[in-house]
Image 1 (cartoon, rainbow, N blue to C red):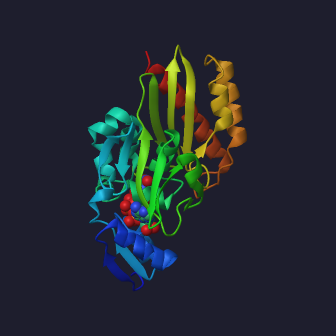
Image 2: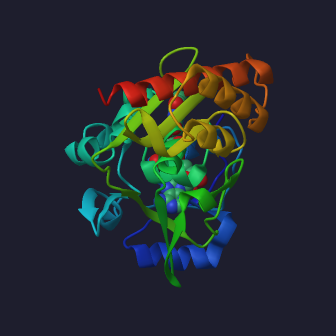
Length: 287
Ligand SMILES: Cc1cc2nc3c(=O)[nH]c(=O)nc-3n(C[C@H](O)[C@H](O)[C@H](O)COP(=O)(O)OP(=O)(O)OC[C@H]3O[C@@H](n4cnc5c(N)ncnc54)[C@H](O)[C@@H]3O)c2cc1C
């Protein structure tokens, strides 16, 4: 299918985009890497009157350590994150997750801002940003505001970003000495969207976890924390009894959708498997 007709403007500055967003609101779509938007246009799932290409806005690009955080501009492509020494050093979780995103050709074009704006619950970056306790930087003609990842993902393809706002960047805390990251997902074929996935970060001392943040993908309408399971896992040494208690807590707090190939019960089982693998990896990496 071909997309419906729309007007096209290549933006020359963020201010230019803000003016267009303020004027057109939901009738306009921002075009970043186009790896989702062009498909939705061609399938006629979206029919904006105006598409505004932000590809020339260099201020939205780049990876830098700034003010004690790792700042990744919205237009930074998946492949740039995958290959960045700064990401490998300060937020290795993203480097672990990147190879799971689609295929190389898509990673060459798709952007982290596009993924975080679209908020597909099966995408890798939203879960990573949630696991790391990141912050989304939103800009509009009214100025700039920051939203914690915990408050940003509201539901299926739904975020705290308003129609007149551009996602400018994401800021991530820098990894500290005793902090460990782990990413894993289960997909039918490498490059497919995950059936279930888990991004995890924790501090580990003497085999005990603290500051644990588990963020599951493909298990609900948004990336999901598992606070009850996290609390059990942080309560003391990771005995078999504690792991069994965490498993039960996780199954009780998750309420996944069935998909075309997996029942809700199967997805809970996969989530529990991913959690056990994560705990093992987080603790064994310290030895
Ligand atoms: C075959 C295929 C397989 C894929 N598999 C995966 C996968 O396994 N995991 C995964 O995570 N992704 C996957 N993707 C999606 C891919 O990662 C996209 O790159 C990503 O979803 C969107 O990024 P983009 O830069 O292409 O955004 P676009 O397609 O340009 O935009 C997506 C949406 O976000 C909005 N938007 C974009 N940037 C901004 C911004 N800065 N501010 C506000 N709104 C903005 C657009 O208006 C649009 O609504 C796949 C895509 C394809 C085609």
